[in-house]
Amino acid sequence: MNNQGFDYIKLVMRDEFLALKELFIERKIFLIVIISILISIVVFLKPFPPLTVTLTTVNNSDYAYARFAEYLRDGLEKKGIKANLIVTAGSVENANLLESPKSDVNIALIQGGALSNEQSQKFYSLGSVMYEPVWIFCRKDLAKVPQELKDLARLNLTVGLGPAGGGTLPLVRRLFAVNEIDITNRSNFRVSSYESDVDDLLNSKLDCAIEVMPYFDKKVQSLLRNPKISLIDAPDAKAYQMSLSYIEDLVIPAHSID
Image (cartoon, rainbow, N blue to C red):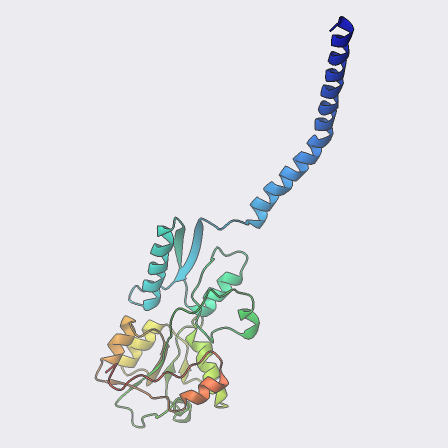
């Protein structure tokens, strides 16, 4: 090949190199824009599962909720996900924290019937984990012993309903509303902590206390075995189930609890 052939090849290679250089310069801004968009998606939209989550619990280790939250935390950490626990009053406060953009709460146990239909549509449910009985505890020494839920209002008994942020209060209000009884402004229905309800019931400062908690909760166990306290039956449980979708009528075999 003569010198003219080499010169031609060099010219072609130089032109191709210049063309590639110009293409890279032209496309460089485009590539920078694409990379910036991808980084923004990762930073602001957070499309990947988090490695750290916050879930709710209660401030008393005797409660079943506290033990269950610790069980969830241990299970997540075995999968490489760090779980932080934050103390709340119960289901209503849990939902408010989940809804708040200023909150770090990612996971919460929320009791069926604790939320309004509007608020419940704002969350994803991963499924139900347990049945929780509606326990109606009353003192045995009452002059008039109630036979069913609506007797608590009819006999004007003092009743503890748990804290304002808990799930028991809104559920019980709906149960009474099915009986066309509004307990919102009745002074004999008290909003307080679960601990206060149990202590005052045992000290005769309350006539009854309604708890929505698992069977294995220590407070529930202590009340079930206290000779001064009795359980009120729910003979119309099937009717409540037909009226409220989150209520289910479960028959417990006789003597299986006490």
